[in-house]
Picture (cartoon, rainbow, N blue to C red):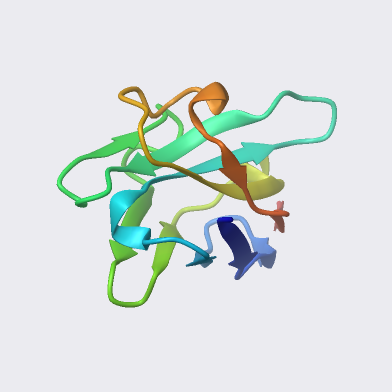
Length: 124
């Protein structure tokens, strides 16, 4: 069974940076595509970024493009999300997700495994 544990969330001022990390265990990490999603209060969970199992392709939402970077370390069994130039609109719970077989990595339905989430709060 895949287990995902996020860390790195917190409170930051607008314009600041945070680096989220997701520790993967239970299966062979290097065979799983990984994604980051977020959910703000009263909103649906939305796609932020994804990376293929090999790390050769990355995908970003329009709001994340140019500000966020997803990366993975297959030796560390972890995926990270570097978030720069944070805005109050980025405030949400951020979730890590994993899937082995989907060919489209942006929808939430593509992922079978989810972490518990880490809170990111950006103050203005």
